[in-house]
Structure formats: structure tokens, C-alpha cells
Image 1 (cartoon, rainbow, N blue to C red):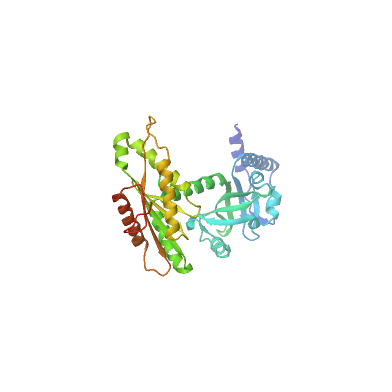
Image 2: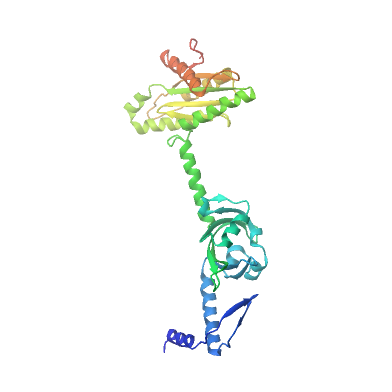
Length: 353
């Protein structure tokens, strides 16, 4: 007789009896045969063996005491606490943040209402992510997935579920979110801010100066004869010029300033807390740095790249929006390009260089 057939035979001979929980002990209405007791003990050992090799922690939570009726040995690897220690401590004291998966990953400030619904059976599947503190003080993310635990009468008396370390997954998700946010606000080629980010920040700055009674300036720059570079040396060389020129622009700015690629060979520079006179000298510093930079083609041929720049400013109390301020600077850029190039214009009439 096989081991499986032997177990079936033993169980078939088992007399009918009911079990009722008393604390952690179980009292029965019949005497369990020795052979069956050994078989049950063997099954318990097998379950313990299998759960000890599982990377997930398996648990059974009793609602009347909110304590773990069972928790697998994997909890030691997960949190550093032994099974008995976890049964004694308040698990929620380890939780620093909770996100309910079925509620769009919203954070939870109070468990009261959630537990009320859970115990009433309104939650068929509990799925939440916890940021918890381990025994050695580390912070890890764990996933909790559980289902209702019913007694013989169909009453919910607890839940059965698993805990899994998802710290690595959360780290990857956060990294992806940061990269997506960067893509949404950054020019892929030059790593500068994009047009959308530039005008969003400019709009905020104009609102801010009216509250703080300060001023803001912008510079619009355009590469001179950029089409000739693309036609003569190819678009790869043109892209390299855009990348190097962007780095030169950033090297001329403060940390609080913002450089952006507005499209093609056009760039925008946002200068908070800067009057137009100061913005002119920043523009002139950028112009000179670019004119002196050694731009070369793939075969090391010099490209001789220069830029023309237009400057405009807004002060508190002036009725101007970001579109109007941009148009003002763009008009001055147009004047700079049409009166010689490689120069800075801060007025519709005068050119300063």
C-alpha cells in the first residue's frame, strides 16, 4: 500500500467529531487514535517544512484578539522577529505607512473604518502595501494579501494571507516614476528643461513677483546659421552642437536659474530675482562662452558656432503674462539676428554688445 493510500485509509477510519477552539488549544468530543495522531503530526511537520522554504510569510490572523493564530518561520527572514515574538507584539506598531492597493494606492491614516468593513465581510480580498520597520531598524516595503477565514457556521473569525518583501519592486517603481517625470519635463537630447517646463516655471515666477514685489528676466537665444551646420556636416554634428551648447549655457547660470530647449535651435533661460541689466550681462556671458567654445565636426573640423539673444524682464505690478514676456524677448532676438547676429538685444531699438 502506498503512503497516500495509507493516509486515505487512516482518515476514512477516523470517527466523526467536532473541534472547538479554546485559546490556542483544541478540545474534541472523541479520542483520536494513535495512528491518526502520528499521521497528523507528520502532516504538520511536512507543512512546517514546506513553509520554511517559502519566501513568503504565511499567516492566520484571529480577529477577536487581533493576534496571529499561526505565522510561518519565514517571518524571521522578513522582519527579524521570531514567530513567538510576532504573536506577542502589535504588528501595527511596526507599520510606518500603508497603501491600500484596491483604493488606487492611497495612503491610510486610520485603520478603524477599514477594519470594520474587513471584519463585516465587505472586503473579499485584502491587498495592501506597508512600509515597516524591521527588528534591526531597517525600513522595508511588504505586500499583504489575505482572504476571509470562516468558521463552520460561516461567520468570519479572521483572515488567512501572505506577507512578501517588495522593497526591490517599490524601488524600481519609484525609479521608473522619476524617469517618466523627467521625460515629461526634460528635453531628451540636451537634458535641459523642455518648452512645457519653461513656460510653466515662467508663469509661476510672474505670479510670485507680484506677491513678493520682485522681478524676473528671461533670455531667448537662437543659434546663428544652424541650418548651414546641419547641411554641411550632417544632423549628427548638429545634435552634438546642441548638446555641447546646452552644457555651455548651464555653466554660465546659477542653480536657481533654468535653461530650456524651446525647440530646434532655440533656447530659453529663466532668471528669477534678476533685473534686466543683470540679465543682459548673463546673456553676454553666454554669448562670449559659446563664441569661444571649440565646436568641431566628427573629423575635427571647426564649426564656428555663435548665438543671438533677446532679453526681457517683468517687474511686480506690471500687467504681463508669460506669453507676452516671451514675445517681447523673441522680438528683441529677431532684432539681434537681423542687425548682425552674435549679439544681445535688450531693447526694440538699441543693441548692446
